[in-house]
Image 1 (cartoon, one colour):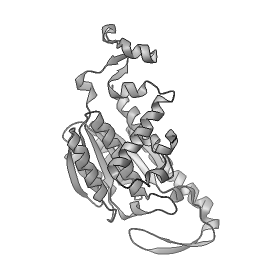
Image 2: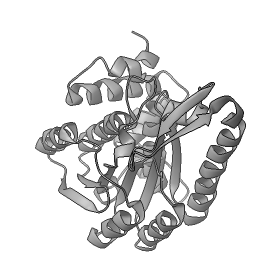
Image 3: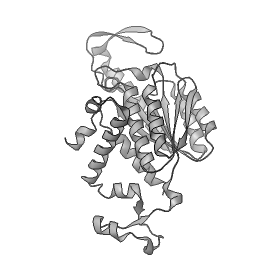
Image 4: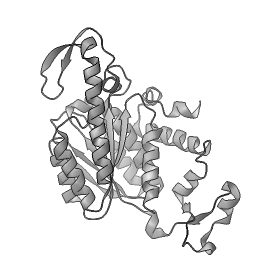
Length: 297
């Protein structure tokens, strides 16, 4: 099986146990790193970082240099560990899919499980926070191997059924955190953006690193509809009929404007904004985690 297939949602969907899904995704991702121009990046990810001006040359790991032809130094213990929180949107709209194997929530859970697997592998503490209109549950961060089972077990039982208030929930998350952390938020962001922007600024002001995984269904991004279609608003169950063919251009323009506003505000705020849809391979999100983690050093 090629590396790409490890990372395709339709292949992952065939694996029903979440712990095996996570291992499958991570295995494919790390194989891809070794087979790509990022070879050595996975070495750096685990125990090393690139040698930079000001580092002591005596700290260069010559065995790694022999393998990669690049200078790496061992990370000190203080700079290897980062506390991470997976923050999951439980709103009903996350349960939507049109024609993909995984709905938005399943897709987000699979990504979160893979990130949990990576962080525990790194001995980084990782916790879980879930929300809809408010924070519903939280598992405190731990780095022990048993945390992986606890967290994945919890993720596998979650169902997206609630109304949503992302801004209020993220404000609650910001108030909960006592130490500088990496906050990874998974949401479709289908709400008024202004309260969300405010809450992201509050998180960043608290010194936290933030990755915002914006997970939309493939159909929400590409609008593959024709003729008169009845749509239902998932959280209010309000129905409306639309001439999809005539509405397509306006819809696609609106989605692009929606994402572009998030791009701009997140860039200005120092939040990593990752646009995903449920047809995409999982490596894009995992690479974003790695690059964000590297940027701390």
